[in-house]
Structures are given as C-alpha cells and as structure tokens.
Image 1 (tube, rainbow, N blue to C red):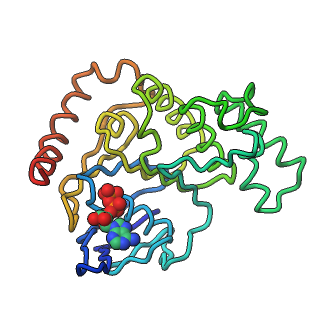
Image 2 (cartoon, rainbow, N blue to C red):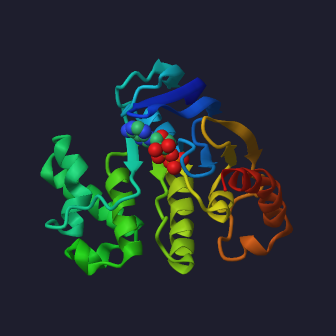
Image 3 (cartoon, protein in one colour):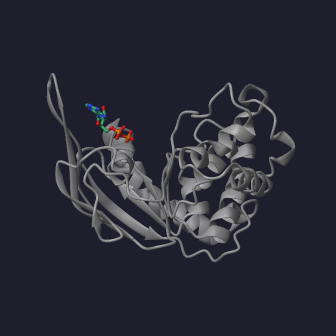
Length: 256
Ligand code: ADP
C-alpha cells in the first residue's frame, strides 16, 4: 500500500544543505503496522511528512496505492502529531466531530458516528468535557478518535504517546491494538520507545543517523492477541529488544 523507493530529503539551510534522509526504500502492505526508530535527527518525522504529502522528497519516489505522492495528501489519511492538536474551546464531542464537519457530513450522521467513536475510545462519559479537563492520556485518545472519525485507511503516528508515563502508555497501547485489529488500517508510527515499537508492530525498521538509510527491518513474530501487560516478560520480546538494540544502540553511540 505504501512504497518508498530510494527516497531522500535534503533541506537547504543557511549553513548549506542538511541531508536528513539519505536513501530509504520500504514497502508496507495493507493492514500492516510498521514502526520506525532511529537516532534523533535521522529524518523520521520528515519521512512521515513525505508519506502524508506535506513535503516533497528531493530524491526517489513515494507511492500510496500505486499513486505517486507528489505533495498531494493521499485520500483517507489520518495523522497524529507529536503536539496536541485539540481545539481548547471545543468539547471532546466537537473536537471528534471536526473532520466530519469539514467533509460536510450530515449532522445526524456526525452525531451517531461520534457517539460510536467515543464508545470505542472509552470516552463516552467525557463527551462534554473540554481538553483542559482531561488527563494527558485522555487527550491523546481524543486525538486518535479525531483522526479515526474520517475512517482513514492509513494512519501516520508521530510519537503519539511520547510524553506519557509508562502506565498510561500501556493502557493506550492496548486500546490502539484493539482499534487496529478491529478496523485494520495500515499504520506507520515513529517512536523513540523500542518497547512500544515491539509491543505494537508487525515490523520495526531501524534507521541510521543522517543521511538515514534502513539498517534493519525486523518482523515481530509475536502472535495476536498480544497482552500488553505480560508481553515484556516473554523470551520473544526480550530477543527482539536485544536484536533491535544491538543496531539502534550502535547508532546512538555513534551520534554521541
Ligand atoms: P527526527 O524526526 O528523526 O528527529 P526530523 O525529520 O525532525 O528528524 O529532522 C531531520 C533533520 O532535518 C534534522 O537535522 C532537522 O534539523 C532537519 N530539518 C527538519 N525540518 C527542516 C526544515 N524545515 N528545514 C531545515 N532543516 C530541517
């Protein structure tokens, strides 16, 4: 569904050119959950922005469903940014409804779809609350529901749970797995948390420092349903941490 063919990105800067993404090739199948990890500054967010059509690559090609992404946002795409994108003056219900409103969906259809989503995200009791009344974890859940409202086939997640504590994150991991298993989107997630990547993904891709290239593309063969609370105690999980860290840790060392 998503193909990156020798994709590169160089940014012109006052000091010269920053080669963020060197040459990245990846093929991501429909319904796959792929995480991207790598040292900071290796172009992970840049890659997501290029897949989303927000930024054009300076080398190579990106195709979604066979169509060249050329600065055009592919249809049915959801994006969750690192920063909170909830509108503070709207209730949870109105925030979740926003995308559907933009699409011109009829009000009664919006009301029923939003109600469904709030059930899915265990937020029905907070429909009329405002963002400042929610915990960090709940706000991230609202952001997820906002992007699910328009029924995306592709979800791009940029460190969606970055600043949360492990307890809250683990609960959100369980919910994200449930939602993904139910709705079957293709998900590409950027994260700096290796445990999170292994817990959620079908594949974890390790990028090198800039200009980045793919160093390791590891299939996570842990079957579903995955129990996010006990997964980390399993030998399979530990083996993945070891093999991924042996490559990622080296990149961190090199960057230091
Ligand atoms: P990551 O998400 O892996 O931390 P980014 O994609 O945010 O990496 O950035 C990769 C590199 O490109 C960094 O060196 C960053 O400073 C640079 N960069 C990102 N956006 C721009 C931009 N708009 N102009 C110039 N340089 C940029």
